Image (cartoon, rainbow, N blue to C red; front, side, top):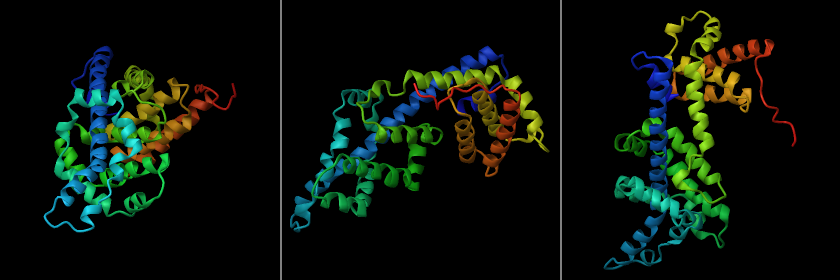
Length: 301
């Protein structure tokens, strides 16, 4: 969506030139998202690893208390974390993007101090046994609750990490996939060719089919002039109609629900309802004309 928005707001050009520009912008965006993904993993892991720094500093006090001498470092040996830290492709990617330079030590300390006050952390270090689920859960807690939901840190990321505001949702998706994945990940090629191909195909289709898609959209803009509709909403409608017509593996409900959520996130407060209404009406017309051809996902092979 952001790539199409950039292309749409550029000086007018023919479709082929726009596709070339869009391809370059999209590739840059995908690569930047992957770099920010690596930085996000490091922030999460460095927060957990700070337990060792805390233990060392407190035990070296001139008059350490019993509590100072018994700081838990259990999380620093977290098995889920070390499975990734020992992944050669991860260490190579960290070096490739020079990710360590983006880690702020003061923020790591703040996050750690918040972590040790949480009930989740206290339950984690007091548990008598380790499970794969609990090892993953505490790391996921750091990411979801301490990093993503931390407004001050998000403002800092926006200021210090180029592209964070635009690419945050992509990074969150990649992090979610990281926690869901059970197989060894290749961080040097984390975004599959299939996903890259889909992104490029959708962008090119939206550009190629703009005129036809707009003939379907325009009549549904009841009491609205296309020039008065938010540009982002129009782009989302074009993307949605393109998916409905030209991407047979994506169910219609998935398409509509996805673009409703994107509209809510990136456009006006009313955009979700607007996009829902327009796409739903277009879908009904296309189905009547037998123009929707989706693969039957209910079939068993």
